[in-house]
Amino acid sequence: MFNRQEFISDSEWEQFRKCSENLPTPNVVVNLRTIKYNYVHLKDSFPYAHIYYAVKSNPGTPVLKLLDSLGSNFDIASRYELDDVLSLGISPDRVSYGNTIKKPADIQYFYEKGVRMFATDSKEDLKNIAKLAPGSRVYVRILVESSPTADWPLSRKFGCHPDMAYDLLVLARDLGLTPYGISFHVGSQQRDIGQWNDAIAKTKYLFTALEEEEGIKLTMINMGGGFPAHYIQPTNELKEYAHEITRYLEEDFGEDIPMIVFEPGRSLVADAGILTSEVVLISRKNNTALDRWVYLDAGKFNGLIETLDEAIKYPIITDKDGGKEGSVIIAGPTCDSMDIMYENDKYKLPLELKQGDKLYWLTTGAYTSTYASIKFNGFPPIKTYYMDENGIVE
Ligand SMILES: *Cc1c(COP(=O)(O)O)cnc(C)c1O
Image (cartoon, rainbow, N blue to C red; front, side):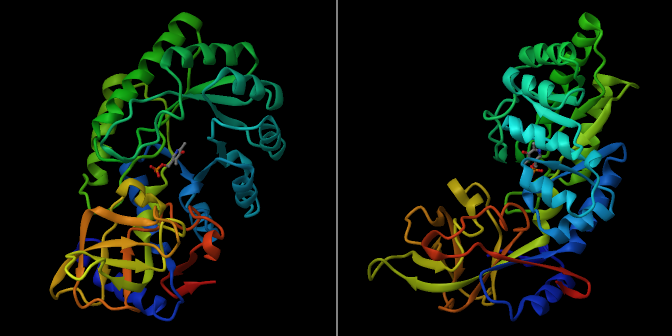
């Protein structure tokens, strides 16, 4: 159904097959070389940007170590992620606390560990930061319209209206904090580059108003994530994003471009992963049914939660591709009827496909390995392996 070569080169595929052949399924194998390539490519595309890797997208230790060695900073959302990152010897001044939803005790914990950069979007949280992380740099996340062009929207729950962001930054100053900048996230896997234009325009308005009316000079724009990975639905190449976003910045800020931060997750790690699942059962619901149900040992609860509402459409390949195909409903192994990955979007799989065959889900390096339940129906979280040019990394 899919042309594998559009997503992964022959040599990478062969290396993956060699490394993964004997691993028990289901599993995800993450190729560290792809992450390195993506990181370097992002830095080349935006030479002026500071990268804060969104740890939640794939918190595997080999990934964190690699990105550390490449000079990345880290965007962190919980004390557990913080512990993981600091335990690798990464300095807390390379960490931002990007979650706007936090307990006072967690603010204190981050402060005690040495973190001095905090996101916020509410008065309550800002006051807690002033009290428990005195003098820190704060940036305020603004709401951006939810757009149907983001395959995995992150709007609504986070951010506040720009008018409120203005008030919060004034209050931050009055409470002895450093009003540092503005952040936004245009939605993950954002296919419409124009979304950055609107958000940058709002940001520019806040920079100007705060300076003119309050004498507050902001320093930083944190543009979050949103850059694409290669799923079925096509997107522009990263260099198009870079070209356009840089142009928006120059149009709004001229020579005086603030410090730019990105928090990429998906675009760095998704393309690096391949999830292997085994066919547990194939059946039809009546003798003349056209669709086959294909049940796998991986599903919504152990790695494939981003198929919720069929939002992320992964390319799937099998060892029997090339022959006749028929449409299928693809479902996971648990006793929950929401554990169906694709039903409305008609995937086609080979008619020859049998119990015990494997399905390879490409582009599964982001939001799979830990975005899973622990023991629903007794199924463990999906096992993740990391490989480099020498094979599987222990
Ligand atoms: C999840 C998240 C990101 C990563 O977004 P991607 O679209 O995966 O790059 C960045 N910033 C924040 C605040 C996030 O919550």
